[in-house]
Length: 295
Length: 238
Image (cartoon, rainbow over all chains, first blue to last red; front, top):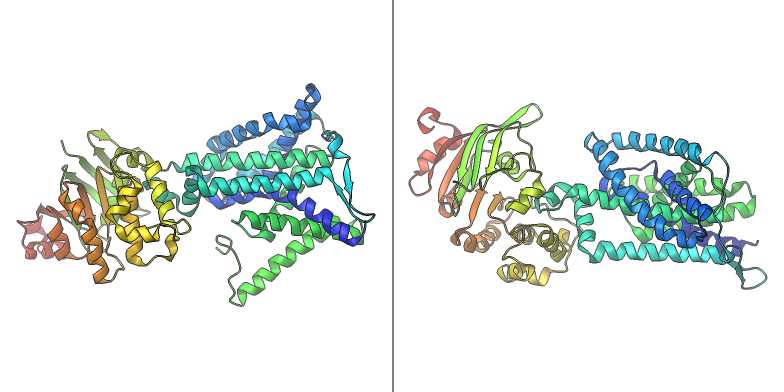
């Protein structure tokens, strides 16, 4: 791999991180919940697909037809049963609740699926790649993931801009009390937000599991990458999230080009640099922090 | 039967009691001016009626139905609308989006987005502007139009003139005039006594969380109202 190819692969990897980060950003934007179980929910999506591909002749791609609606239901129920109650108890309680959920999910997955490492079959797409020149290769799977990420973010953008549910989501995010006064059931809107968030997480989880091996405790690592993509890209902006994912991906692949061990470290360093830069610029009177992050 | 009955309602903000053991009835077609000094509990009372604030005691009955335990969005669907103090538009949504949220989520009836844009012609050219970019008067018109789109049977207006230039206040009240005349049921909180008395059919004056004076707007003297307002000769007024 040369440098330019490393950047190219980083951009492709960014699609996966953006997909992973979208739900995290959405839940924070609408409910001010930092969902620490987000990576674990992505993993639940991967294990759902694993069950289907192991026990039926379904391909991983086809399993999404069941996994995604399933994830929507999981998110919806999760909001009504657990998160809604903790939201009512104050700002910090959802943090504790989702942290607890992270541990419970990891242990349940271990109980049902054993601590073994698995990966999802990715079919012929998984191994194929375009060879553009002797220095450039584009793996089909990574290109597909980036395409799906752009498609998912675009659809979400359309949903938020063009539909009543989208307007209610944005209105409730801005001012839930006032939305209620106009007849919007804020709790139902929250349940929709979590349903969408868990579905995008599951989608990201399935793709992640096609690219690399996973075990019941892979959730928190995914959470960190998602979190970094959100922070780099800026909260509350979908395309910012894509950019954040790409910056993180490029940092990691370029880091790995220097030394394979620097893959994760380079991402963390860029993330910290962005945080510090934001703080410095803000102290200088420049308002660069997006809405919600400054408070 | 009154459209709205408030029975023995008390409401607190933490340790502070804003409304104490308050009774109030509003008949269909009335315009009630709720007046009183700052901190008298007017805003809290309106928010309690609309469901944005939970009363610690008492019952709220709307159209014969006890709504005390209903969340705000259910009350909005029954026909209670509050234009909140400070307008509270959704800043990142356009004027039209602000209106469409209410039109789709609220009670269905005669008001449609097109209809309110006809009634408030100043909003038509602003449809696609972000609410945050509007002037105070434009924001207030949007907030009122937005509440009308929930087709309220009871419209609660909380200080619609707050923070607006006098000439803009005139325009807001001009826009409201058809509602006052059309037998709509309205409860409005207004700091400007003269204006409150001129549009209302009945006046209710609050002091320290209680009703200290109420009567038809035409029969109350200005002196009675100001005395009640400032809590002078309280025994005589109550």
